[in-house]
Image 1 (cartoon, rainbow, N blue to C red):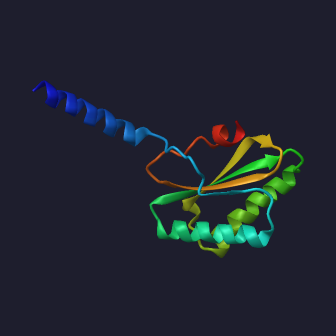
Image 2: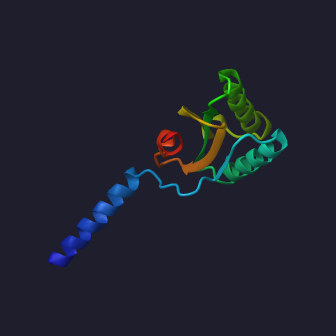
Image 3: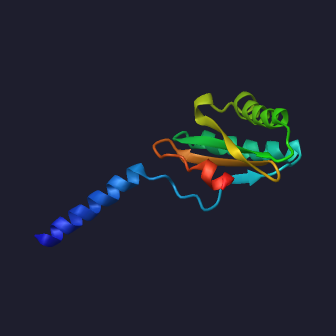
Length: 130
């Protein structure tokens, strides 16, 4: 009887923690620095296809501003990616979340990550700004 209670407690703790956990990201789906638009658009097309095939996922696009990158250029990068994914590739607007990482890095950086809708996203600020 005692072993059944122990098993029940373990199952409960595991299931309760699974619902509230943030997924552990060891490798991003894709990440890149300053690349030519032809290369970036291919990466974005692949991301859009993946999300179209996985409607249960949200696509996160996290942007890190470079130390010498003007704010206007940073915002243009974000707008270009968002426009390409939604307007050109037909991704639903509610399937894309844009993250602006506050801490700056030496060079501009972009991270693309799909996450199941029912999971909390990773802490991009901590992962990319730390």
